[in-house]
Length: 196
Image (cartoon, rainbow, N blue to C red; front, side):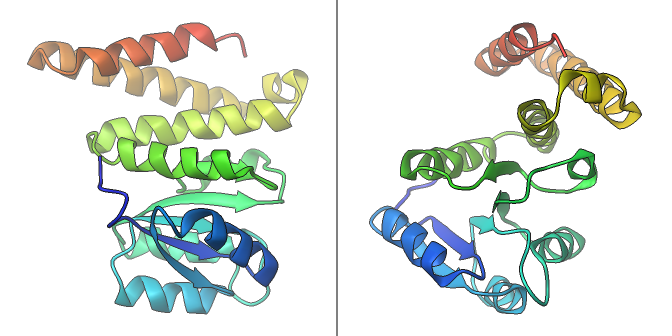
């Protein structure tokens, strides 16, 4: 895992009190950068190597969704967790984030989110895509009713993508004879939460 003393985290939120609180929680463990709007965030991302971005969705001017889109379009090498009070809906399926945290997070949740993203960064691109899809599925399960999800074609497609990607990763890893621990984790996650 990346040495936390050199891990850079960018906090992006238009509420200065939120930025300062998160900064206080993280500054002893990470190299913390802050931005109060989307333009400022992109300026920092273009100038400094950032490992993890904690990104609010709803901001005046350039929204967090637009910042995320730019990060993905420009292929910026960072992990992105949306940390926001916006309850997710089916639109999150198409968004290119790595994790989604609904405000207000605890200090421990924020730290765990960063550590999870850093750990995932050590896996292959397909494995990282798998974790991102799982994150979307879990946040939708938390915020939407089972009946809403069952009626959604988008959610059904998400579940199909997860299963297909899991099978692809398992086949590749078994062929290579590598990463048994990751395979075990895949099976545990899928078997433990396949009801919806």
